[in-house]
Length: 94
Image (cartoon, rainbow, N blue to C red; front, side, top):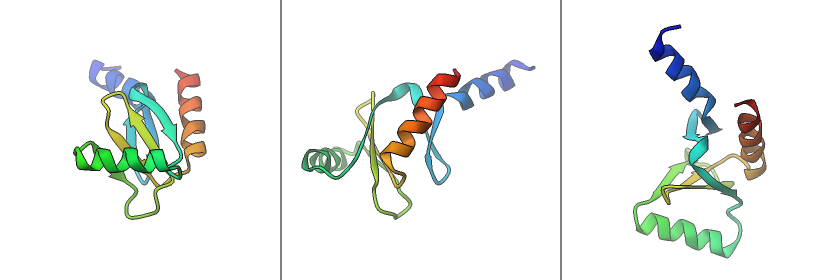
């Protein structure tokens, strides 16, 4: 297998699907939380004000907030439980 293909395959294993063709680097995820509480809404608003917010909902309702180690906040329209299961499956296979 060529080295470039080997790297691509390794990287694919480390990408967490957050819905609608969007992925994040699984090793950089700090937390996956529900957006319903007031502190999470404040976190989202602060990230938006500071240009650290990544909206991957495609115009749908936000169902989970993913906190990255870079302090970026990623919004997803997929339930937090579903993304957590995908994360656990991904980490278990590496």
